[in-house]
Amino acid sequence: MTAPEHRIAIELEVPFHDVDALHVVWHGHYYKYFELARTALFRSRRLDVPDLIELGYRMVVIESKCRHTFPLRYGDRFRVSAWFKDVQVRFHVAFEIDNLTAARRAAKGHTTMATLDAAGNLLLATPERMTARL
Image (cartoon, rainbow, N blue to C red; front, side):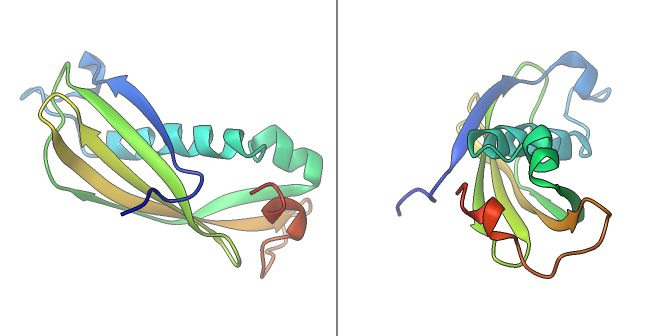
């Protein structure tokens, strides 16, 4: 299988403050890891928050999902990958978290973001000024 276009990956280590008493990452932190990779993805395409503001747009998360398949534990090295699945109507970003220490996929998920104009009005299609950067 070929890698999705524009796929980026970041590598991290599970810090102590992200784990519970069993030294397992609390489930809500996976969304934080997704967000770190999503930020890197958007920055790589000049679509980070300052870029969007300059273009006259804003984005809001309208849906997110995470499926946990193997735990991350304190000290584990892991990779978070992010890529665009669809950008025509909404920005649909897919994610995978791989536990590098255990050589297992830890989670997969997605985030869907809607585009707003500068006044906060929902746009029904992604503006060409944004898709041109892909």
